[in-house]
Length: 64
Image (cartoon, rainbow, N blue to C red):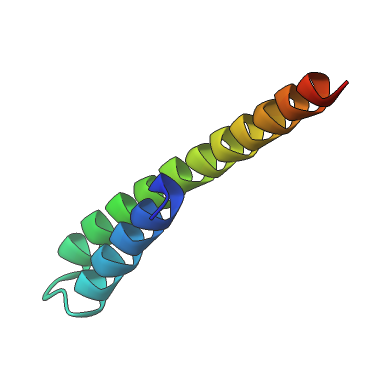
């Protein structure tokens, strides 16, 4: 599993906790944490794409 997928899974798990929160303050904390995981997942996705592009570029150069 890629990092981005794990981070999105964490975001989903924390969002589920927010649904069951007993107070608005607790819910807000969980939603904030979930948003942090989503942002981290977005950064990981960008890094994964860049790494894939880099590898593809290396493969093209090796084929020349």
